[in-house]
Amino acid sequence: FIVSLFAFYRDLHFAYLEINPLVMLEDNTVVPLDMAAKIDETANFLCAQKWGPVDWPPPFGRDAFPEEALIRDMDGKTGASLKLTILNDRGRVWTMVAGGGASVVYADTVADYGWGHELAN
Image (tube, rainbow, N blue to C red; front, top):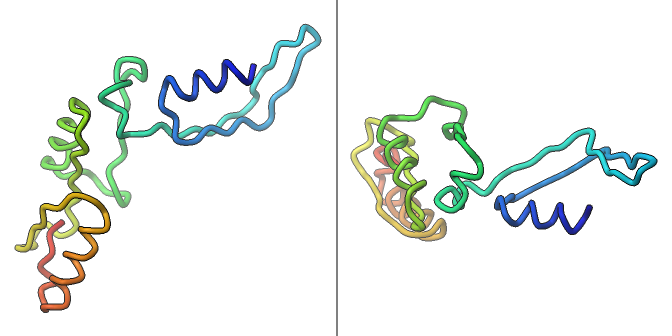
């Protein structure tokens, strides 16, 4: 059971998988009774057909902007990591960076120069 579960976990690119509780029947069959799981969204280009249609939720509990949906669709069709989160749709300062650390440094610098209220993404 554990070996098969691990193969399932790796094959479908789970980021998290919790089974609690599970029971073992008299014939040694293991039956999960409850499960919580998270799949790795960045593996969409590898696993989209195995996963089937997945409706990724928009960030921060809001509807996605059409531009975010377009980028998310493009991200699912490539091995590259393409992300866009619009924080301020009226902002005039846009950053194009690679990596979370770089985006924080750029955002801090923009804010230090007094333009934080204009950050769009």
